[in-house]
Image (tube, rainbow, N blue to C red; front, side, top):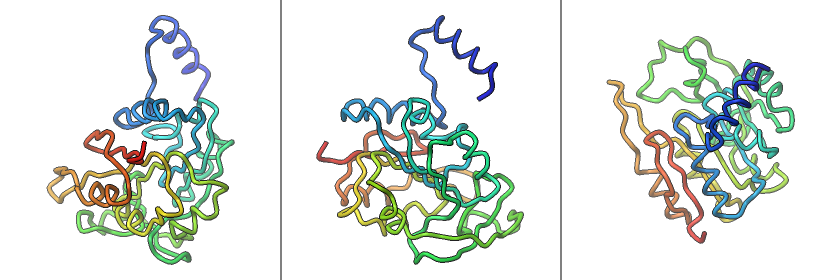
Length: 224
């Protein structure tokens, strides 16, 4: 964040003391912040899978600004310097996360980096792919095992692989308090429709739906 933005936000906070800043697409970080406060988790750790931009439309940057830290995982190597620049306290991993065996995989670079994906779903056209990169991929449970502890918050945005990753996830061993994941499906005509598959899966794994922005859904451990 540059100097002038900091000045603007400083004076805005003085004029509007109740003004709350969100870096997420639809205020997900503020919703999660309230939820974590209710859970009495003051300094949450996080795992940001599919970080992309480290600030803009990001579900974990708000917590970074509050002194928290975690792990950012981004498959696109061109975005890694940006993440390291703005999130120096965070661990930054340049790899893709899948439900498959750890090894090598293809990253399909789309016109917008936010649409980069490890697999081309039926709703996306291969003709829109700018390039294909060979990148390291890691199984979700291998990734979780490499962390010092299970994070309190997981933000998951893998452009089509969220359900398969959550299906492979060993929740008996790794169970974060809060999961924020994309649950909207994009059809060929551009319309959007909420998917119930992730909701049904996570409910069976001991989670309850806390909030839904019609883009992302926020789940919390049911025993809370």
